[in-house]
Amino acid sequence: GSLIRAEKIDKFESLEQAIQERYLAPECQSYVNDELLMEARDALSAPFMKVVGMDKLRERQSNLKFTEDITICHSTINQAGKLPALDSLRSLCLQSSCISNWKVVKEIVQQIPSLRSLDLSYNRLHLPTIEDEAEIKFDNLESLIVNSCGLSNWNEVLMIARMCPNLREFSVKQNEIKTIKDTSEGLESVETLILSENSISDFVEVLKLSNLSMLKELLLNNNQLKSVALPHCDYTDRLKI
Image (cartoon, rainbow, N blue to C red; front, side, top):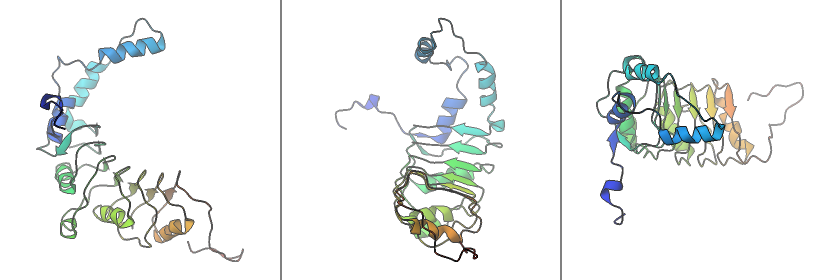
């Protein structure tokens, strides 16, 4: 680290600053990277290429009051800041940022009452203490994505779920989950549960989710399941699972 010049390091920023830079940039700023445009021309063997409609897109994005979706990935965001009015925002993607504390997430979500979907994939969020957990609630969130967040313990998954009492879709892909705890605590309202690309090898673990009465869709792609074995029952009976 001491060999890196300070001016070469990207500074931390707030979500407020990131939105200002990406969605409220001055009109003089170019929205099309010239180098990428040249690469596209070469790839398509098109000597002439013009990007149209950017003015309308810029005008629509700059009116944040009507913006429904904001995506800011690979950023140095580490705090909320004072967010502008985002009355229509329903989906926020903050993949690969520098947010490490659920209290910061709380500050963000509290300022966006209309928010329904939040993507925090590829962040390393320290779980709150038991005392802090009681104060961190995201009642408005219906979809939460925490793919590749270094989660390895099912209790960690349940703790995050408990913070979202109205959660319907929960994605925990690409983590290190091997075992599942036989409980529905925190997952009572979940309809879609995505556990793809984890390390679950025994179908007995999957059967522990059978008490989730609202569950309609369960994704287990690219785990390490060796077989799918259901409990034995007579062919005239019906499994309670």
